[in-house]
Image (tube, rainbow, N blue to C red; front, side):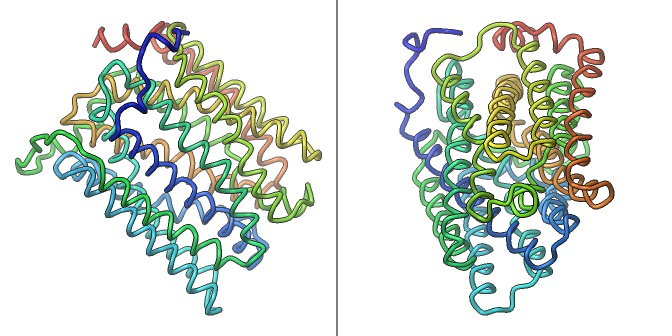
Length: 411
């Protein structure tokens, strides 16, 4: 790792600091909302399958809008796009608050609102990612993504814990707080100042529409990195089933659910702060594969655990391992992509992330409904370890990557 004193902090750049605050605000809001939605849906249905449908409702708009997302992010002011999405998310959270307060909330209305949230987040995620390289010098981009990850992970610790705590006053209070935070994030993004960049206004053609897909297919290191994350998290994600673990296996209630949801972020935050100060310089490929293997092994142990402390520890460990993969993957993608294509490439990258996260939640819920909760998580963890072995064989060039600088220079 490189000594932290050799480069200035990314937080010396005001626009990036505003970006960090916006990302933290939206992440806190989303995580709080996730705790309330998970507990409320499971209370209404008692069904693991419906917990899976929560993820599917947010994934479907991302899947169908992917090509449009990239075009919007590359053709229009990215700050305006991100702000608009955050306002929509704030209105959606307010709708959930009103529904809970008025008593007309149902599993169907929750899924419908989450579909809208999924559409907004589908545009927000790639747009915010594509903003980062324009906020800091090129040499600081890997650190910027580590700091960005720290914002998300800090919020993912605070958000679920707050959500579980505030839920004692009812779901209305959680949703209302989330709504305020979404609107606050929009204000932070609005204050960001960047150099104006000419946007592509040419008519949309077939080649332009699929440029992000073509770019990723032609760069096997990027393809290998994002597909590794896709299948590892798709199989190994247990987040959707945490309400069942909290209520029926570990017996810890809504606040315990908040702590369980915070645990992966606690581990991830610890590592992301380390990476923000001392970025990994060598053995990038092997480090990423090792991190994903740890993620899978921790999932296996969590699946079999009946101890609240051991479960928290394993969730923290898998979160720490996951953030290493996230930072390396995002740095590979953004450092190797021209600015005029970052929106389209980030959109394709986001569909991989969304598939692994939201669709992974649906897969977990469906598998749990078929085989039971513990077998579903156990199968996923073992599957992740198998994916690591297969991907090391399919993408040997990814294993051989030593540094991010060398990888980018060779393209």
